[in-house]
Structures are given as C-alpha cells and as structure tokens.
Image 1 (tube, rainbow over the protein chains, first blue to last red):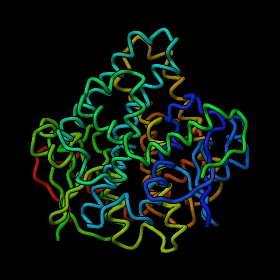
Image 2 (image 1 turned 180 degrees about the horizontal axis):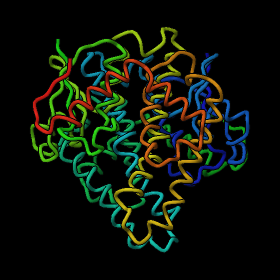
Image 3 (image 1 turned 135 degrees about the vertical axis):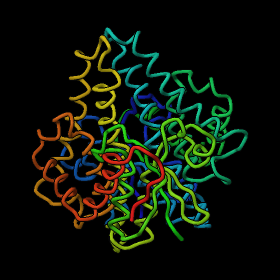
Amino acid sequence: MSIVITAFERSPDGGQGLARDTRVRWALEEVGQPYQVRLVSFPALNEPAHLRLHPFGQIPTYEEGGLALFETGSIVFHLAERHPGLLPDDADARARAITWMFAALNTVEPVILDLVIARIVERDKSWAPERLPLVADRVRQRLTQLSTYLGEADWLDGAFSAGDLMMASVLLRLRPSGLLDEFPNLAAYVARGEARPAYQRAFAAQWAINAAKPAAGSSTR
Amino acid sequence: MSIVITAFERSPDGGQGLARDTRVRWALEEVGQPYQVRLVSFPALNEPAHLRLHPFGQIPTYEEGGLALFETGSIVFHLAERHPGLLPDDADARARAITWMFAALNTVEPVILDLVIARIVERDKSWAPERLPLVADRVRQRLTQLSTYLGEADWLDGAFSAGDLMMASVLLRLRPSGLLDEFPNLAAYVARGEARPAYQRAFAAQWAINAAKPAAGSSTR
C-alpha cells in the first residue's frame, strides 16, 4: 500500500526544514519506505476535507490504505514499529527509546515552542523585551538537563533511534535563536542527526518544494 | 516483578490530582496492576539519585525489575502495550489510540501549560492582564477543534483507550481556569473519565498522600 503524507504548499520557514513533515520524511527515509506528498495550502488546512484527516488543522498527516493518522509522534512511532531501523529489538531498550520520543515532544518541545512564540508571534508586544529572557531561561534549564544527561555520548540511549530523530528535530527549532550553540554537545548531537543520509534526503525533499515550487501537486520519490 | 513509581511527597496542587503521577496511577488501575509509590521531596528531585531515573528532575518515574522509565506518555504506553484494557486489538484502531496520546501531549497540553504558567508563574508580571487573554484564546482555539471533533461521542475513537486517559488528564489541568466549562461536551468527556472506577481509585490514592501524609515513605495497595 502506498504511503501519502501532507506538507505545507509553502512552509512558513522558507525551506529550513522546521515544518513537521520533515520529521516524518526523515523517519520514512530511515526505514526506506517510499512515499508521496500531497501539498496543502494554509486556507485548506481548515477545510472539512483536511480536518477529517487532522482535527487540529495541521500537517503532517499519514495515509496508508484505509489507515489515516495525524501527529508527528504517532506517525513516526507507527513507522518505527513496523519497519526495522528506528527502535531497538531489546524490549527494555525499545521502551527507553519510546520514552525519549515522548520526552522530546512533551518535555523539551513545549519550552522551545514558547520561545518561538515569544520571538515571532509576540515579538512586537510591549512585554517582549522583558519577557523574552525569562522564556529563554526556561529553555536553558531543560537544555542544561539534557546536555548533562547526554554528556559525550553520540545518541541518547545506545544506537540512533526514533527518540533521537524526534529530539534532534525538536532541538533544530532552536537554531534560529542561537541558544543551541550555548550547549556544544547538543549542537554536535543535532549536527550528527543532520549528517545522516536519511535526514539529508528528507531535507532535500522538503527544500525542493519550498525553494522551487510555489504551486501545489508535487510528490517525492 | 513489582512496579514502583515516584510521586511528589507533597503535590503543589494540594491533592487535586493534577500532578502527573495520577495519570500513571490511573493507567495502572485500568489494567489492574498493583504498584508501590516512592515519595520524593522537591529538593530531592534534582539530586543525583533521582536524576538517574529522570534526567529532567520530574515525577513520575517507573521501575519494574531492571527497567527504569520516565515520561508519563511513555509509562502509560508501556502499560497499555503489555496489559489489556487501554489499547484496542485492531491494528488501525490501536494506531489511532496512540495518535490521541500524542495529540494530548504535544498538541493540546502545551497550550494548556502556557495558560497555567500565565495564570500562576507570571501572574504578578506587568504584562499578565494584557497577555492572559491571548493565551486563553490559544487554548480556546484548540478546544474548539477538539470539541468539534468529539461531537456527541463518549470517547475519541470508539471504546475508552489510553488516548482518552491522556486527553482527559490533560484537560483536567484546565478546570481551575473555568475554560473547560465553555465547552460542555468536553467538560462531560472529562467527567466521564473521572467517573471511571479506575480513576476514582487513582485519585483517592494520591489524595491519601496529599491530604493526610506530609511525610515520605507511603505506598498504595
């Protein structure tokens, strides 16, 4: 059965790869599954056809035969569970890799998203100059904990896993702020993720859309 | 092998059941697994012994024989995968239930947590009166989408699942704000969750600690 995901017709990041379809593309590339992409315009996100796939009007979605999923974490986990390459075979190591997926999405990404909101959505608000440092410090607190845990290791728990894919993807959202560079081992960790051939292919595929094709109807592979 | 979780020695919510151990207790009760609780003081959260279990210095953690996990989502999923009662047997329905777990934790909880921060952590900041309505409106946007999706259904996708356990737990954090009551079908959904015998037992167990026992060393069941 062919896999179809959705992505922005034009990503608001202009092709930096920060839109969440990149995470799913990366997972698909890691497990070697071909896929097609249906591009969605911003207005179409809140139309009934898309809301039937994604109740919160976001991307990406995932369709495979009769199965329709949304939520990046769920899609990446679905792929990781069905194909080798993203979860260890050992039951305990597998549970720990899944733990890191949830940690990326529920403990690390929320503070990073707050920083993105403070830097972009609320940048012109009267409170921005005073509040931004507080929000940045909340990010630093989490990054300090993560940096301490990671130490000199290459990945979070042994071999590269879906947990690393998700954590590196979440940390990438920090790059425009410069905060990631305050933690050299985390910056190196993210760079290791970006250097993976599967990430390179995923990035190139989203770049091909966002840098070159303003119109809808593209697909990859 | 016996299961040991951690919880706050004294929950900051004074026993409202909003600390995240309640989610894990609820899951344990739904699948009928006995467990013990090790209480942790606030200062001890950042001591090496606890950070070895939870790199971000939070509760709950989960220990079972040689396996140690953190992150509520991961622990609930671990239980749901190993015991009947929280995930459907059908593969597609199971994937959708997992999707709702991730949606609760990565799409709904972050905006709710922002409101909690705005209402409590930043309540005395100069920007609080002007900013709070913006944050509340971000919550309303998500709740509107969720309310539209749920409609008159009892649960998010057929029978009660780990996805509902997590979504109801996340929505409970909104109760002190009054926002949940603006969406009667969501308020009724949360009330259905709270009415489950397993939730009642979980709530009572955390209440026994937070209402009556200021000292460490308790256990349930």
